[in-house]
Length: 112
Length: 115
Image (tube, rainbow over all chains, first blue to last red; front, side):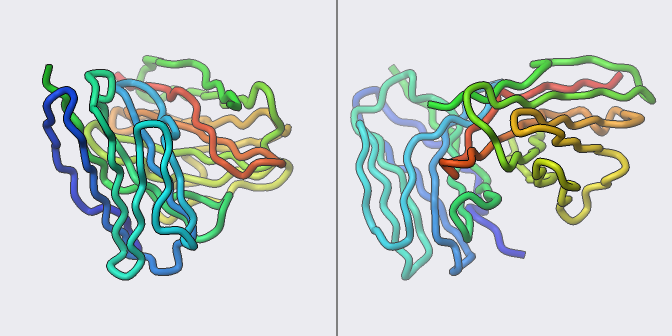
């Protein structure tokens, strides 16, 4: 079936560096994408979202890039901090408000 | 932002017993709630979609008689794990979409351990 983000990599970065977390999706009908942060033992926390009619969206210290041609989504975190250490998931759905399909996740470890 | 509260945050139960998990939207009305299951170091897997006043829609492979979902009001959905077994031990997470805002808001999750 359709799936998002088949990998579970670990990304280690030095505090202060920029982080780039990637996600591949396979459902070309997906219209809405979201990045979530999940700390141990907690539910997902919304970071940033993007609709399919956009290719870039910026938030506070975070930027999401969407490349529909290759079905690729990325999350850029500027000046990574120890508090950014968590598991990051991309999620997508075909219709805003409908059920979300989550990717496998990426573990981000920030070294001080 | 909107708040979704899950209760309990953790529970330990004996095999064969049933456990109920509550998901409440505290400051908004939720037309739709979703229940997810997450095993350690894995992603969230959708179990079912719960709509207020109607039967839940279960994902393929999820036993509806095992995981009973009730969405009796616009602020409360419950997931009951019936006749729990150790393999049901997992992290269960709910999310809720409001009537006005279709963004999903997640609860803090419930850690279920069946012994």
